[in-house]
Image (cartoon, rainbow, N blue to C red; front, top):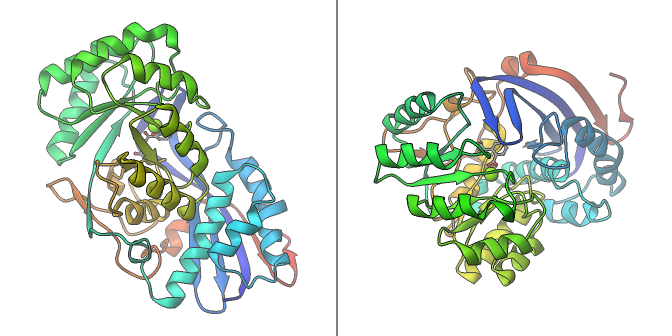
Length: 376
Ligand code: OSB
Ligand code: MG
């Protein structure tokens, strides 16, 4: 398979409602989409970082630069005749930037699988054709708003509710939700907003029968999480701290968590995500599929992963309507039982709709194997 063209697009999609976390608020999803064209098929990848380096060190303008200056040229220097496995090796010489790498690697893999008529889910050894959906509920202005949102999501059928928390908007609110719905699967995500000095908060959360507390401490930490996990009953889940497969091995050895959130983009793409999945499976650690408010392109990739055997907990794989008035692909729809179909077509199984993609695009650059980056 010979890659002859790579296209980068910066796209923006308004969200149906603002999404607030401990690190900030988003009202518009903005991300880079990558398209690779080969002699046999096209492939798509979505970069999961955002405008600002707030969730991770990566951000859109930086990822664009890394893709434009280092990753795409590395691919063409290798002759463009590369498989996804080879791309992973090629990228090893660029340190860091897993999200930028993931976007291009996933696009190459998508093209490869489309060319051979294989679905990503099938290629990954997925065992289900539907996955259970959870929803990540942003921090709301008031507890009343939170009750209303959770009520709406439960009536939609979601099988797990995750509440974003931050200092000052935590135990009291989570308790209100737990008392109103004693039986639901409920978890919280702090996005690294606390320190070990906040042990009282986590001891109080221990009484609320939570499925897990996600990334309570520093975004790069494993050791303090191990101390916290030893001090509380609730399972700690790591998100931000796991940036490559070796991190999960260290986390398990240290006892930093008992559950892992896998975001393929955060760990460098589908191949690394599969490796994280396998390491967790071998250690008996359950995983679930996280999300980064992806458009249909990234969502399709996530759903294929979420269908793998050790993804035993409902993920943040919500349907398109939870995020966007109109997605870039045909919308992903959740059934009233809270499940969603895993795409079964070749590759990721979906393609952005031309006119919607063009309407959402603000910047576009194309490189060809022969001429490099074309004038904009
Ligand atoms: O921490 O899981 C997170 C969204 C953006 C950045 C980080 C996170 C999230 C979510 C939403 O929780 C997940 C989703 O529905 O895509
Ligand atoms: Mg998280």
